[in-house]
Length: 239
Ligand code: MN3
Image (cartoon, helix red, strand yellow):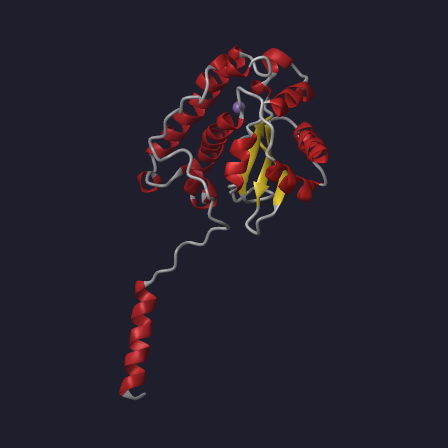
């Protein structure tokens, strides 16, 4: 090896050692909703009664102050034991769940998912009914056949969730829109999700989201939620 080849090889080695590859993720979520540890309960973007009659004030209050607050507290408790993970964003934690210590993984999956999902959900509901813009209607119709077909597919998917879970519209890493569902507090950011990607719409279909007003009538709840979806927010998330 002559001196020039040797120096080039040495240089390559040094560059290789210096540029440590970043951990590989399935995708980079284009959202940073919830900040970092210690996480806190965000205010609702409207008063508890603002979504009546579709969703009653009593349901909104217990859902926010009871359920959502519980996820935040339990998430913080799980992270107390993991100082090396406390600087991660919530999206970072959820996309890397499989890298977390097994002892805290389930708590962070359930409660981190719960905090993220509800923080995402609240602004997707609008106190004043909204018409989707022509551009959004076209984008949705191009993917799902028509606006009416899309409504049918979304609400059917919500009805088919067995037990507790969520129905989503996801923008996949290759920019396709897809309807998908997750059990419990899982979401499409997680490595366990059937369809991974950036959510642009999510609807809570846990009984706690509707039982006080609708009891077991999930179809009525979903039809009411459809009336108050914040299409401007969806369009903004679609980018
Ligand atoms: Mn909920």
